[in-house]
Image (cartoon, rainbow, N blue to C red; front, side, top):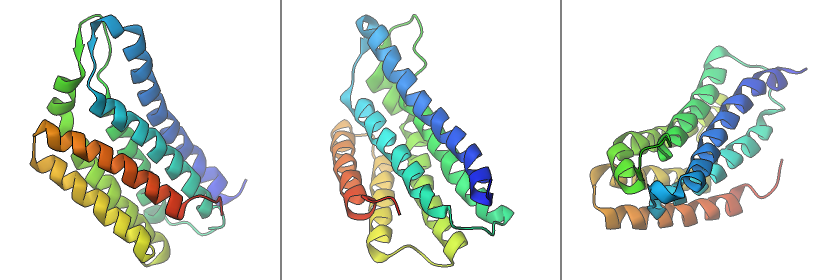
Length: 186
């Protein structure tokens, strides 16, 4: 097993746990649908985060040719996946026997969620700096700036209409990001 093959095991486990958090939440919504008050914004975020997690795993394939790893290089890649896991875990509440209001849950946890979203974006840029010594290309950096800026807007306002607009905007923006930069496995 090469260096990245070894290191990618832990990264893949964390990404898999994040996917499990989201899928478990969706399953809980289906099973408890009679006692869940649905709010489409966190449902949208769950699909955005499934796409983000998939894209993260996909993009990490590009690290396979890297044979010299420092602890700092691995730590920043690991931190990226850990932050994604934590954010994914905030999208849905633990579904038990009590009624669930997804809107109330979303707004109760939006501060942590969007703080993590902004941190994920910043750590993603830091990852490139640590691994390559430079920021990614201008298009990639521009998308990162847009994601972080929209996350800061979400942190700044509790207004539901703004959050609804942001969820839809970020979903479309992330689709454009993947289409522009990650359609091939290189």
